[in-house]
Image 1 (cartoon, rainbow, N blue to C red):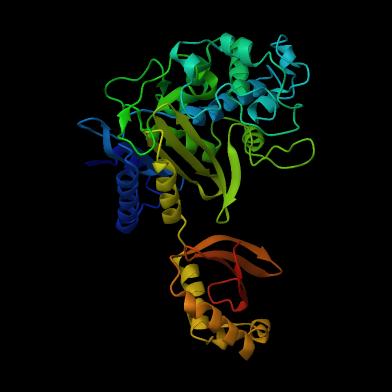
Image 2 (image 1 turned 180 degrees about the vertical axis):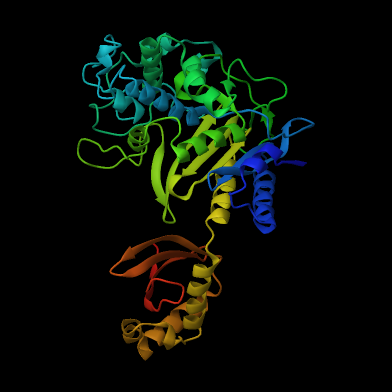
Length: 453
């Protein structure tokens, strides 16, 4: 059973937001329902931001046996919480109370090589501190409650896995250390600091995932291999702490995403710091900033992070330059429904049917051994000799229709747009490069196909 929610208050504040069309909504709903049906994940909740406003929120499935999913229900967002811990350190840096280039020893001198590790390296997973939770399940120690001090004593006082800054390795331990430093400098618990500086300001109502959830919120589920879906036993309290202690609704997380787009909580320099890829000491990139992944998807700059708690998975994607965001939360730690739903929404809000249509039309013509020479530049026509056209037809026609024809990204080079498409035939994948004069009627300079791998 599916329940929709489009709050009147949201609609009234979204007068300038581009609404999703009925067709877009239907596509998103179908993708979400298919993901739950295919994976066995009981429930999912989504929120979509366009033009810097929440324009759509839905819940699907059952959040516990016999209880329909509600959009206002709170899910454990786990490691998505890391960007809030990073924001807390950045806010304290703005206050002049610390620097991200301070050594850990300034605050916690008893930790391994604390004089060599910078606060920035804790947030970027380049510190070398060993991750205390690399498993995708609750290990034996997690049957009992823990404290940040216990985590640091057991995992942050052993030898580092590598020299600080030399490698990237995901480390929940680094965030436990960061949380302790925040509390020491701020003089209050981390969640209290975030409530005062972030959540209250944005009208968000997250809770501690260990203590704040009720019967009105989703249960977490698990399955062993392809066995039945079962309610998952939750670990003892305290394990996620600053590495992932938050639970909230999809719309609450979307409110944070809007604040990131608007840069309304921190100074612009802090957002730039958080969203800039951290480099290793050898100059290699990490695809990671401070508590967030950073990449470009189909030509759109993306700031994202996933979350995994026992019985829950989540996905948060922000596209600051497009003023858009996607939130997907679910109540199962299997199936990756959150990723497939987020991918489907991403395809909907960044669909570019005109460009795909032009590329497909040229492709279809070449499969039949013809091109419209009026659509090409002199160089494009020079490339497509009779032999080239014959080879394109001979090699493409036997493949039939591709299963998917997707525009991956676009850029500019040499005065031409440079568009990259992927064609998926199942057992074979092709990459298509289309360069053209700018504008909707720009002539095509290049149209070439290559094996993708």
